[in-house]
Amino acid sequence: MADTRSLMREVAPKLAELTSEVLFGDVWEQPDLSKRDRSLITVAALIALYRTDQLRNHLRRALENGVTRQEIGAVITHMAFYAGWPTAANAVRVAKEVFDEMGV
Image (cartoon, rainbow, N blue to C red):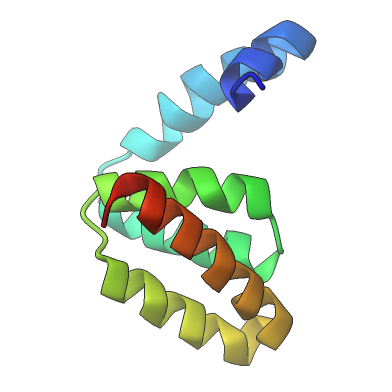
């Protein structure tokens, strides 16, 4: 299956452009928060919203931005109390898949 960016370019090219230029080209580049902090915030939001596909991609990004496996585990645990146990349990499964895939 094609990756999300390829699908987006094919199905919704303007959304792909906005994602690339505005979200990742501008918002993620603002100096007021580090990319590491942005990753932690994004992972927490995606856990809370039960956005599994996006969580998978942002867990990868978080690891690349210096967030550790232990910190991701701590975020998942913290979110269990605010977003519910099922969302945390889902995030554990997704995180394990990403950790295994990335060898961390």
